[in-house]
Image 1: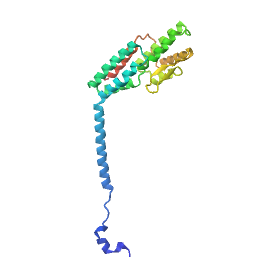
Image 2: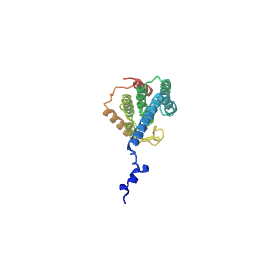
Image 3: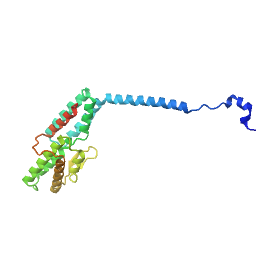
Image 4: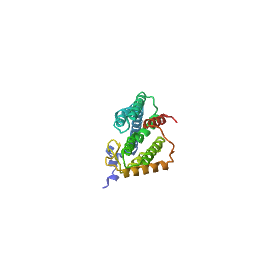
Length: 229
């Protein structure tokens, strides 16, 4: 006999219908989502609130030692490190806005200026080589000065810089620092010069003399990052 037609079965308190779980699960999901959103918002607040001191530690512990070990001239190294120390102090004291920190981070993260020591290595090689005429040496110097102007205007990307050094440069895996190969040839330098000239022509960089040092260009870059424009 079918139990569905049994009156006794319909009166059994243990045979009551199950309560649907859908609404209950939805409530749990919504509450959980709210808690997660609150946690994420709190973490974002904490990170933003600690942004300056964290940035200062990165400058002191990573960037300054990187500059100190670079191939930049000692005078440029000293000037840049002094500016970075001053910048880190402002970060620690909370003197910089989130916008300023963000703008500075963008400029420091992919800075071709801080890699300029390898360009100076090229110029030293050209100066000492007997394979270049005086006219070639002067032309390469002027083109590299023009390239520095291009970098000061924020137009030179790290990708373009690495492309110019293909064949005659090395990139350290951990630090990302560019260096000149020990077995570089005069023809590789000439190819480098051709590529640098191509970048300058691409951005229509002025051919007027550019008498700024690397540290002065770095200062210009930092001033632009601190601007609230």
